Amino acid sequence: MFVPTYLLKSRHGLFYFRWPLPKQLHPQRKAETIKLSLQTRDPHKALRLSRSLIQIGEQLNDHGIAYGMRYDELHGLLKKHFRELLDKVRNEIDVQGRLSEKTRRDYELRLATTEQEIAEGRPLSFDTGYQTLLTGFMAQYRVPFSKADEQYTWLERDFKKAVRSFLKAALDHDASYDQFDLSAPVDRTTSVVEPQPRPSPAPFEQTSSTGITIEELAKRFIMERTRGGNWVATTVSGKEEYLSLLTELFGTNRSIATLTQQDVTTVKDTLFALPKHRHKKQATIGKPLAEVLTMTNLPRLSVPSINKYLQTYNDFFGYAHQHGHINQNLFAAVSIKQNRQKQAKTRAGFTPEQVRTILEAIVDNGLVHARKPHQKWGPLIGLYTGARLGEIAQIDLTDIKREDGIWFFDLNDEGDGKRLKTLSSKRRVPIHKDLINLGFLDYVQTLRKRGVPKLFDDLSTSVEHGRGRAIGRWFNETLLPSLGIKTQLLVFHSLRHTVVTKLGNAEVDGPLISALVGHSQQGVTYGTYFGGHTLQLLNDAIQKLDYSLPAQKADTAIQH
Image (cartoon, rainbow, N blue to C red):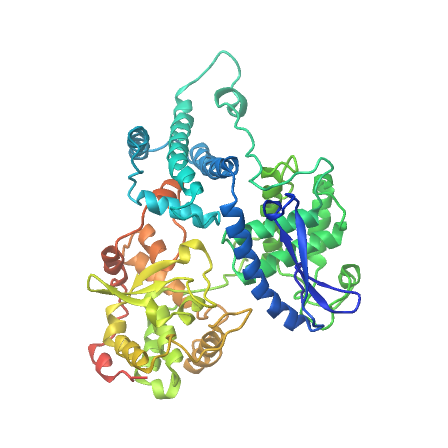
């Protein structure tokens, strides 16, 4: 098995846990590493023990750094956040064209309002609410201030000023396209628009005059993304594997600043020769990279898998460039191009006939096809919400709520073992009337009387696959084949494709569809300042899903 970088072996074969302590928490302001023996030689047991220690370490680091944060550090964090936001807006303008009249007026109105709020000491009044913006910022950067903290007072005051600077700069960049200086050749990057300084390193970031190694910077990159809530546990494990390959190729002491374009070619050649599942297959597990690359008759990485590696390197080297460790991102736009006509789809949606076949099997013939509650309600929830398998499998009974007469699923990561794929995955999805007619709320009430905490309390948890493994395997390997509709493109995730397609054909607006299925909103203005759709709008949209379920099926539905 692949052992993450936070686990090491001692000379006696025992695993020990290694956790970096930020310099802000050290009495002498030094960056050091805490080492703790796990008293086991079993890598699986060590991995399980380390996961709990990671959570404890992250909480200690987050709270310790937050409450000890200096004013200049918080100020730098705000500058970093709004610089990145401004870079996105500038790029949108440069690539897609000038701001629309509506967006420009919106920016100008918000700027005028913000100026007045700063002068009068009032909170921001965007549609999202000032408190929502602040809370989102603190969650993103893991600075859990309370209103009693001095840092919260700093943030509350300076956040408004940062918003003002962002709005001014965005409008100025858009207005710069009004000018045409014909006295000399115009270079957009140097003449018309004043070049913007590279974003300064994030607070707590240390640079080295001799150049930081690939291995050390990879640790910082992974830690920052993890602390920022960008990656779930399985994603972290994958990124560690991708980045550790660079260290294996170039050595533990290789400075990232010394890599060249020839090294990029070396990386691509290595990926083409790399066997699939190298750290899991018996033939290659634990063997050196040089030996693995010479092995024959082994399946190699697919082109999509190679591109996942390259995208990770693009993100990593972009991070290195942003923090001043390298002069350019060598992996920018590096990928293996595929013929679109030959490129196979990995997923497809179900046809209306296939949906009806699934519904008839689950609803009318449940004693034959769906004998367990999760086999019935899991696919039905997927078909009427578009939720991901993991999101469905981890629903608590307390996540099924009612507000203003509307029942809905509160999909969140609050609770033991719950996790979401992205920040935008946290959302409210109204419960479709067909689900209610089929007896879903009655089933929920029965479970509440039993006192069980989860909707599917009988599901076991897998470290790699979460709680949804049993539902997915049954649906993909048992139900679909038994119905004669199984193909390589049709799996449980196809229910999600089906919902998106169905809502689009019902003329539901794109942002509403994204809000329902947990996709991030497109565009900086919409994605950053929009406060979310009302529950009523979401409910109106979800009810447009129509699979033509006969009325009598609700009366004959099997009550699990």
